[in-house]
Image (cartoon, rainbow, N blue to C red; front, side, top):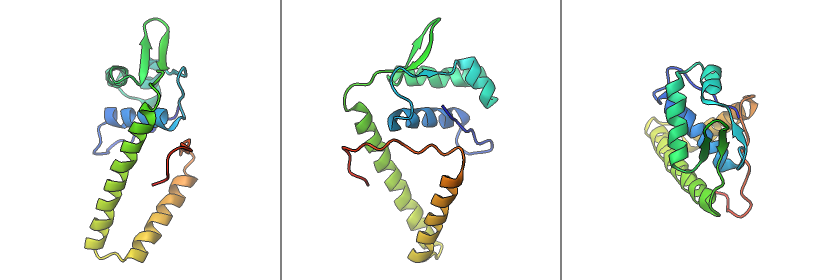
Length: 145
């Protein structure tokens, strides 16, 4: 499991961790039964407060993403059939709405459609070159957005 925390981001650290663990589960990078780092281990690796990781794990457990097994560890939970694809579809829909908002904002700033396309291509290239990028597992049953 790879998580990157961006210090100075307007997104709180706990939300960054939550979103990344959740995304890796939904994308299939973390599969049911996979063991996650302990609260203390992850807090140490990310240089964050133990309570921050504990709150994230508790939230993910309450939502059925992970199982907290006292004395045994933390594991990715078995999910009901279709639950992940439904949530992944919703996340993709939210992403597309955010992308639309960014395109509108770029147009309002005077960027042409060609400039926006070029900036998107450059961004994709940067992300693919980033060694921490984890390519998602694609769901073959779901149409691409």
